[in-house]
Length: 163
Image (cartoon, rainbow, N blue to C red):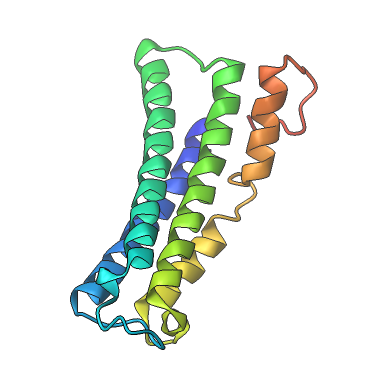
């Protein structure tokens, strides 16, 4: 189960990184912020802050994904089955990856503006794909957190067998 859950979030990190690249390329072209005096939005503190926040959210997502992968790899190399607490944490990590990727793309959409949702804009496809795949039942951040919280508190009765 931890491998299945982890497989579902690799693409989400990739989508968030792609959104970051699209917005960064757009900013490099020197577009401004509509209805402001910023003729180059990359010079606006709000843009700088949101880009920094998006990058940190993507990094956080990737770090959680890599930690979960390292735990799975270590257990496989040792020929061990992951203990219950680690399996529950992997489910929580997967939810964290999904949540942080969505937050990052949300920041990037703020920077890029309403034109992000135009059909010709590749950012709308990235947003739509991420919003869809991050809502897979096994990825659900709240369920993952509940599973992990129950495991941390020694509650044996769980809400799913998929841990």
